Length: 103
Image 1 (cartoon, one colour):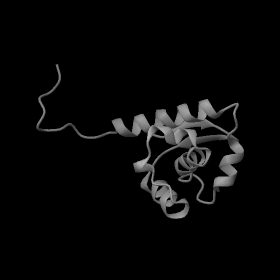
Image 2 (tube, one colour):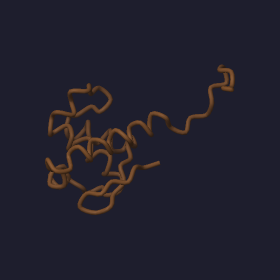
Image 3 (cartoon, one colour):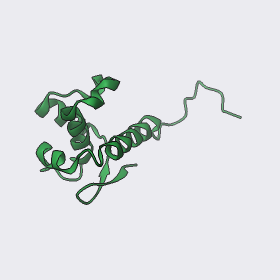
């Protein structure tokens, strides 16, 4: 489920392979190979947010996203990225049939 985020307007972060693929193809950033220190690079932060928003607006640009982020909301934005990333990792995966039920 997408994570709501308030930027220039109410938006939703969602990391489909549409956005992840465009990030790699158009900007050379492979989201699946980033380390923790990547969140210190402004280009990476903007790229990650763009990749999470482009599903709603296919014409959204990295420059437009860069205008939405500043020092006043950077922590909020990175926290929202972390929230969506954690939600995506948890996913709606079916239970592993090889594992005993919890309880």
